[in-house]
Length: 267
Image (cartoon, rainbow, N blue to C red; front, side, top):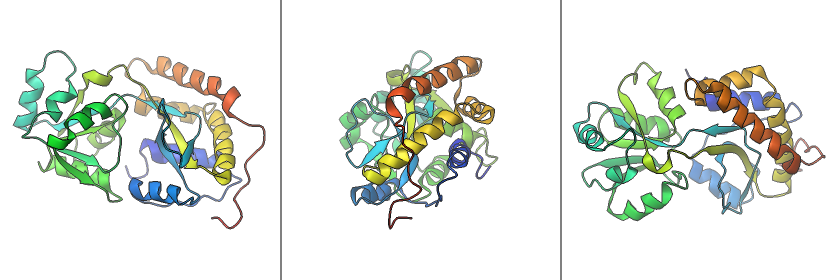
């Protein structure tokens, strides 16, 4: 399924809606991207997350183009340490504290990646006493799922659509389980594109905003987001909410002037 995950396909569709730009793809760890943003390099990333309190002054965000179902714990089904922990918890969801507080478990995560505003405070509360393995390389996510497969970490925390992607791969299919988390069960995570906070980034984000409005009118985009993100049986409800938010943010976030294809001296 290389190239056929949600973000790959959504990015290609976004690029189709921006024919006035020359698009250059670069692979890099998220930590390096944040450093480039601090250095005022002109770069964008499609998979940023909206925060109620936008704390980073180095990048600006587009209007939302999709919302993710909240983070959940991902375990290997035949790992007795995490399976027993899951069985002891009551109800259909499990408090993430059961995992963070377990001193015999190894947590695998990508360096500098937030877990969302509901889970980050709980993570910081327990972090000093946890056993954590961080990956900061370009292929961090593949590496973490391989470590989970071979028992080198006990659990990951990620979005349901990420779990779904790996569960469809022959080498992982049926090995993992997704455990919903009590703390964020009602959360919705709005995703946006992010670009450098400078004049170049402002004009590019303006163009991306208009492209997102056009994306929301495409049947192939609707099919893509519903396939990867909507709960089964709630596809129409999901799309109504997403398209309504895009329409509501359009009036206040989209300027009238188009972005230039590139800033002087920049790729």
